[in-house]
Image (cartoon, rainbow, N blue to C red; front, side, top):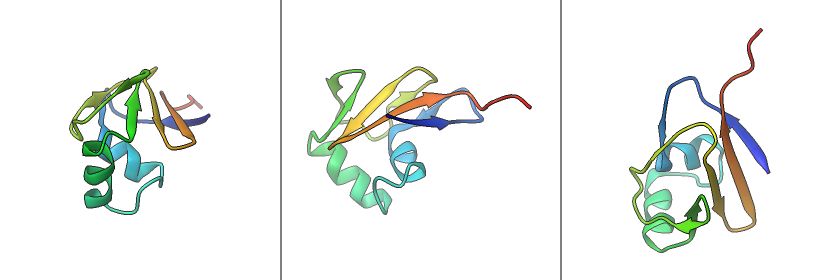
Length: 73
């Protein structure tokens, strides 16, 4: 599982996939999400604009991502 820290309260699913480098472009994110290849919190998600918050888990292929808050210095 890869932890992805975000600075904001939320991030959209397509943005997260690009940030985590599991897709190369927004169009690839759109195709994979709409194709039913992405799960959010163990449910298939077909909306690229789905808003995600810290604690949410995203699975695409063999990759699992967990959204976290950044570590405080």
